[in-house]
Image 1 (tube, rainbow, N blue to C red):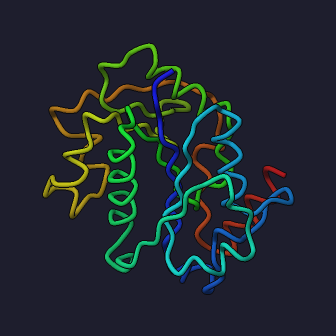
Image 2: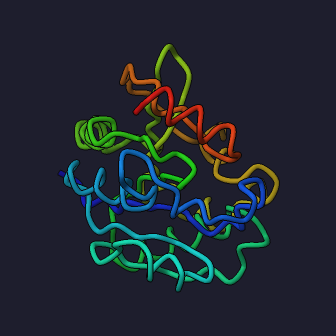
Image 3: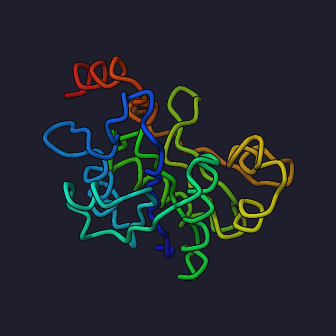
Length: 201
């Protein structure tokens, strides 16, 4: 298997959640960040890196010993700063690529992570692999090391984030059908949280 880093971006201020840290919300008895770490582990992806902001509270209340925690003091500039922190960490570890799971997507299952990783293992020439259901892309996308320069330096990412790299003309982006709607479950507000809990637990 390729050497992949599992990235969890968790540096937002959770303003739409009323300020309660989203990494510490629970589903099925697990905090969001703990659940995602476990899914990466179950899929055989390591190391796992959590990019957070003022992470002391999260460290104190969540079990993060299986992950490396990186502080992102520039979180107010947007999620791209967290992605770039993860890319720099992946590059420092000579990773072949990284999988990107925002903490807002707590229901990503290990089976999907494994399917994406296996698709990359079977086709190491591709740049990006996206899990899809009914033709729609979800999380976690995989970014091969071939995309790291663009993620760090492409001006288009300043406006569009990592999507600019996914859909660039010179990016070989491929899809793997996983048939699992949990790849779309994005929790930003209390209403979305309770809907996710009601539907999937």
